[in-house]
Length: 342
Image (cartoon, rainbow, N blue to C red; front, side, top):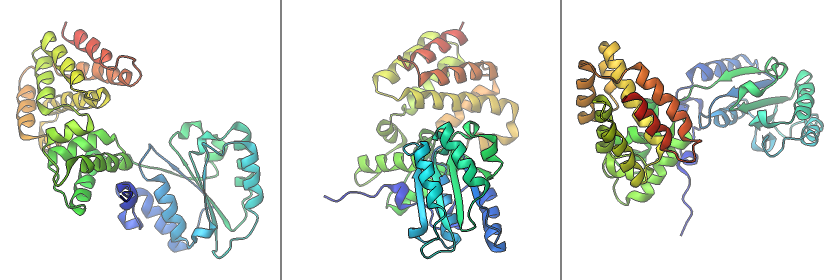
């Protein structure tokens, strides 16, 4: 039995043209390469799975750096002063066969204070043949003196629509057909991460055999609620029916639904009603990712005097933040339901 290649590795962009949703960065990098103005230090900042390391590798490749002159360092496990001192010594040796040696330092915010100070000295006076590419998910933890010595590029988290399109394309390449509702579920579960989207897609493919089933079948695989369960909850909130709303949450828990994903889906539904009421001209964009039955229901709520408004959305946003940290994940949602149905 062979080991299956992870989809996110299999479909990782091989050229700048294949990079999605980061045109604002790719345009600048390609311009710098054309002009021969290679920055000595670059920082890619963004949430997980947005393609920071991929862009770093593509840039190194684009400036002609061979694998032997490309060094990748994980700052989470090489974070001390001794590790950076070794790096400071190594940068002064010439490349083996390329014009530049490129050092990619991932999760650079994990370095210790002493290591940061040592790195700063290297960034202040880097050898001409060295390019540093730093990547971080927590830019706010970096020293201003580090940031000021780098060309800083902030990655866009891919939208729900971009992720849905991506997994649909990958499914097709793998020989499967994916319904729009199922693709949207996977996109929501990915939470703004290309890598997570393809990870979820792989899980669905592995569990699906020869064909990928309906959105509800995909929901069962990834821990999302059935469409019916979510519609029951939204209807109960619309009617301010506390008992029915709490029962819907209990049903989701009993069926093994991931409460973090459940709360995210609930937010999407409430937000859609709020936006429909206040931005009716954009109905197609607002409802595009939902199935027909859900679209009709949300349209109906928005047309009336539904209590699904900005105040309710804010209350469930607060609850969603607590779900991941709560020892009883459903409790923040239950409390929010009681609050908004008083």
